[in-house]
Length: 400
Image 1 (spheres, rainbow, N blue to C red):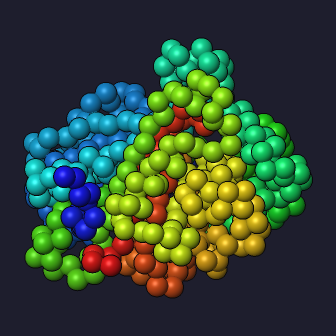
Image 2: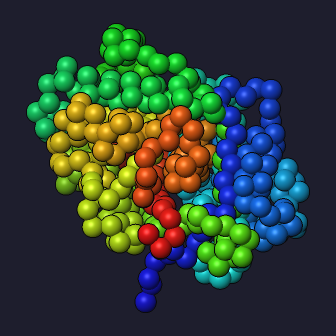
């Protein structure tokens, strides 16, 4: 019988490059930058890595259709390397491959890396793409801001939230992330903005304004994972372990009938329920110390608080406005700036989220450091509200 992966896999090391407009660097440069930090943190040599997973969503000549660019860029020792993509949850998918390989006993040490060079695509937002022929028939010509604006409108209608109240709540979400991002030297956007600036910014898709949308960035993040026993043998004292790692994909029913009202993410509720069970968490509002969630749009973060069971149904607006998710709140969220300010290079985002939780648990987050965190949760989402994939990761100290 399956028992899950709680405490079966340790994070030996992590690395993350500076996110932003990295026109001067190719994907190989970003990979080397993140990997160098990761390898030094792990305290091993490249030749000790036995398998690798390469997360990349938008490919070109430099990023390739296979995992060979990863192997060549890092001079990996002729080991199996696998390219994965799962929309914006690609980084979490790469980590899942490496983590499951170690947990299964197939390898002792594995690498998960995600990279994206979105600025090179020339798009102001995400490049266009299809989610399959049926999805295109259901929602033709749908843009991400348009789809998530509908999520906001549906949420407001269901919970009878006045338009101005909703706008102020999602503005607070963005305000908080900008305030946090100022303290992060690797973040793409490092400028604090006022609530007035956010509320008066140009409208993109009502009620989402300019500051309610995450930026387009280049970046890379990676992790080296192993067993707790090997981590100890390498001299690691404070071992950070994977407590849970769950993915859930839409099956099309959200857009197939009226049972789904368009106000929440079916996949997030499914994946988080399984993740809490795997990690042994009974009361997430009390037990989760900090979070990084997929704030592609500010409304996504707000709705996700309820889907994760942190805020009660219809209660996220009150929690947000009360500062529950601020850096000095009960459950700080996006302490590194989130997608909104750290940036969103698709293949890297899931691993970037884990990177911040890892730093916090080890007390290495410098000016962003939170007091005594226990569990860090990440939520990585790809696709539209009606059809998507969600990845949930929970990490903490071994045995805790």
